[in-house]
Image (cartoon, rainbow over all chains, first blue to last red; front, side, top):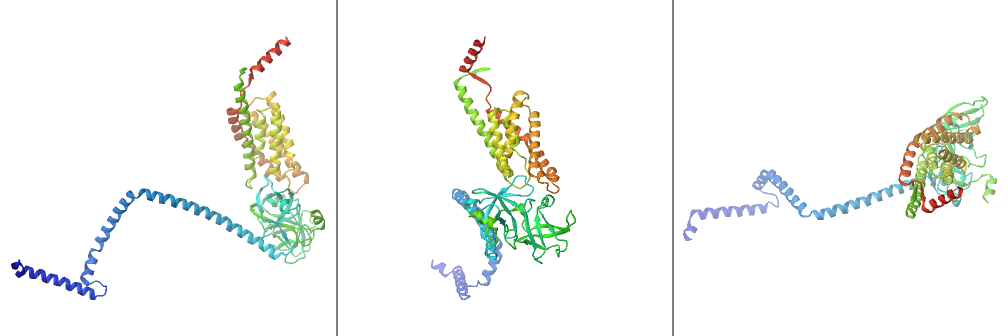
Length: 289
Length: 192
C-alpha cells in the first residue's frame, strides 16, 4: 500500500481527480451555463440521445399500451360517451341559437309596430300536399288566439292569411294564391295603389302579381309594395314584395306588375300571426268577441 | 274446401287482425310521407285503398276507402269528405269488380288504380281550380294534376308488391269450420 501511495500512478490519478474537482468548481462559477467541454459533448451526443430517447419512448409506450390496455379502453369509452354528449349539447345549442335568432326577428316586428297583437311564433307543420300555391299548416290554432282571416307574417314581409283554424292547427293561404287579394301601395310614392293577387303562372316561380294599377302611375322596377290597409284585413304599411316587371293587363285598361315577395313562401320554417292591429275590420272584431 | 278446426279458427282471427293492423300501419306511413316536404308527391292512398279493397270484403273496403279519403283531404287541404266520398265509391266498386269479374292480377290492379287516380285528380282539378276560372288554369292540370297522376301510377307498383307480401303472409285461405260444414251439409240435405 505504501508503495502504491508513493508510486507515479497514484500521483497521476490524484492529479486527475484534482482536475475534475477543478472543473466542478469552475462549473459552479459559470452560474448555470455549461462549460465549453460539456457544451461540446452535448452537441455531439444530441442526435444519438434524441434517437435513443425516441426508441426508448416507443418501447415504453408499447409496454404501457400492453400493460394498461384495459385502462385505456375504459378511458376511450368514457371519452366517446363524452363526445356524444357534447355533440348532443352542440346540436341543442344550434337549435336554440336558431330559435333565438328567429325570435329576435319577431321582436323587431313588435318594436316597429307597437299596435300589433302577435301570436306566439308558429312552426310550419308542413305544406299542403300538391298545392301549386304553397298553402301550409302551422302548429297554433284557436286555442292560441288565432282566428280565421288573421294576417300571417315573418319579419321580412307578409306571407298570407289564415283560412282554416282548428284548436291547435291552422291552415295558411299564401299571397301566391289567386284566392287572396291584398290592397297594396308603393312605399316610395304612397299613391300608386293596386291589388296583389296570386296567379297560376307567377306562382310557378314563387312570385305573385300586382293588378288593377291605373295607367298613370310612377311605379318602377325595384319599388317595394306595402299593404295599403284599406280592407281592414291586413295592417297598414307591411312589406309584401318588390316589383320585377311592369306591363299592361290583358284587358289593356290597367297596368300590372310581377312581384317578388319579400318572403320565400316555399321555404318557411316559422311564422307569426297578427291577431289584432289598429284599423282591423270591425266585423272581424265583433266575430272575435 | 278443407274443414277447419277451432284452433285454426283462432289463428285465422289473429291473422286477420294482424293483417288489418299492417294495412293501417301502411296507411299511416303513407300519411307521413305525403305530409312531409314541399315536392309534388303521389296520392299513395289511392293505390293503397284499391289494393286493400280488391282482396277484402265490401264493408272493409268501404271503411278503408273512407279513411284513406279523409286522410287525403287532410293532406291536400280539401273539403273534409270530398276525397272520402270518391274513394269510398271506387273502393266498393273495385271490391265488387274483383269479386265478380276480375282476377287478382297486377295488370287489373294497375288499370283500376290508374283509372281511379285519374278520376280523382280530374275531379280535384275540376272542383278546386277550373271551376274558379283562374287565368292559365289549364297549366295546373298539365303541370300538377297529370304529374301527380303519373307519380301515383308509378307508386302503385310498389304498393301492389307490398300489399301482396302482406296478403301472402297474413291472408287466410278459405276454410270451413266443422260446425259450418255440418250446417252446410244439413241445409243441402233439407233442400233435397
